[in-house]
Length: 269
Image 1 (cartoon, rainbow, N blue to C red):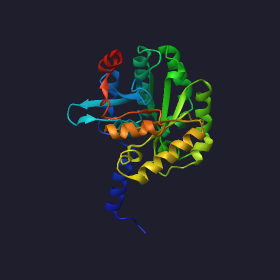
Image 2 (image 1 turned 90 degrees about the vertical axis):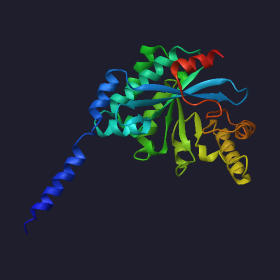
Image 3 (image 1 turned 180 degrees about the vertical axis):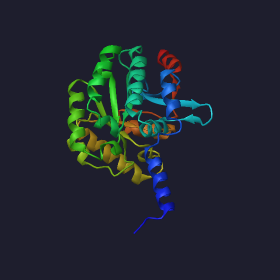
Image 4 (image 1 turned 45 degrees about the vertical axis):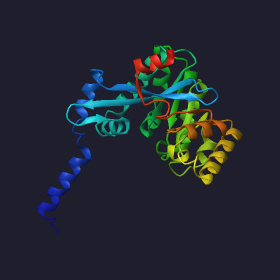
């Protein structure tokens, strides 16, 4: 039976939507070439004494028409436009170059996507960038979300183990925001958990929330993992995450994400 012409047309339109790059992918490529993709750094504070101990590197782009774009949106555009690998290397290099100029006890972290973990050369490229920038591997933490692991956790574990063997630290990011698959804790060579803000924002007012935090911290300690609390916005929450055994915290109570010169000034006190 012949397929009506309007259905053929609709199918062709759907195919184009699947294959055409994102409308601003070309502009994103130009922005990377022109260093228009900027890095900001979310300070992280040590619970023991409140001192700055590191920063999470985040990407930003001020598009002339679409305005402010953050990391998640940029990653989606890059992957849709075939620029995912290039953006990942851009982020890694920019973060490492900045951190190489900080005091030796200050670390830097950034997110790793599923595409990064599937990229066979990602680990080799990271190690090469460490050599080029002079950053010690122990000062670098890769933050891995549950979404990045869901496709093939065994393969991801192998590739992450190779990085951990070279001194790079690994953190399971946004812990508590997804399904909290405890299998990841068994298989992955982790050094840290980063608690999603949803796991800490209610601990000062809800005993159940506080009990959950205590359980997570106890489990992390049993596994030899440090714990960083994200989204800390009040002194009460900050005091409790420190009291309950978290290692570090980040959030607007301490500072919003800062441009690199501002973060460097923060380090100087």
